[in-house]
Image (tube, rainbow, N blue to C red; front, side, top):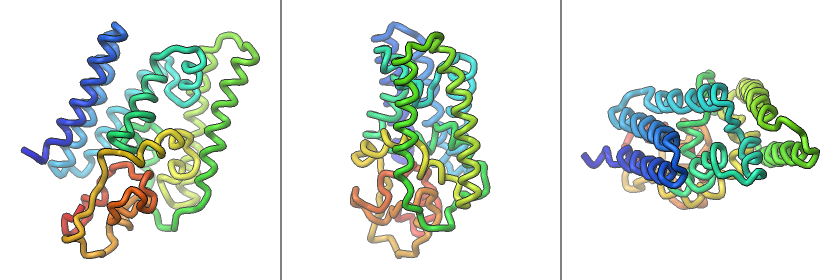
Length: 272
């Protein structure tokens, strides 16, 4: 039963968050919300252990569609980075600010960039594209993510400084238009670079939050060097160009690992 420990731990982490927020915020929504996400992630990990080929995709669709369609389009919550800045400026700790605290600021101390692999609704669509394994070396244009990060902050700051009215409606449309732009740019980059995850590597502003904390992540892919035969297959199949044979935290693209487990699945010696 030890092999099922990881999904149990992940479910326990999210249930702890769910119960804590439910009791402190006196709002049943947080119990249901984080319980649902925890169950979805645990299910994906369970299916992976059972060697179901599309295990991660199950979780991606369960969580991604829930956040995009239900929270975003139906409940009118801007769960993109603009929504985080909006609630942060208003001094309200709920919705996007709680989401960012759990999934993208403090959560990565536990599960690293797992958000990118299992819950991101942008990557959920991009992973359907045909270029799942990058065929070219990683480009040195990752600095562009800091421009999109700054642009999102400047956009929301301008709205507040200009005392623009009906801010909640503007945030909803910013969510809709922002997602359409993300999909358009992400799909365009995927075909240009022949890499589904090009958007994640070069453009996505969320990674500015994710990368620093992911360096200290408790949950990491480790290599048993006594089994490794240095065939290089794990590096070839990694969508984020991570050198998982190096167990140091300073390994190449170490903070880019999305815990997709493609390296684990493809290792011929079960060294990962």
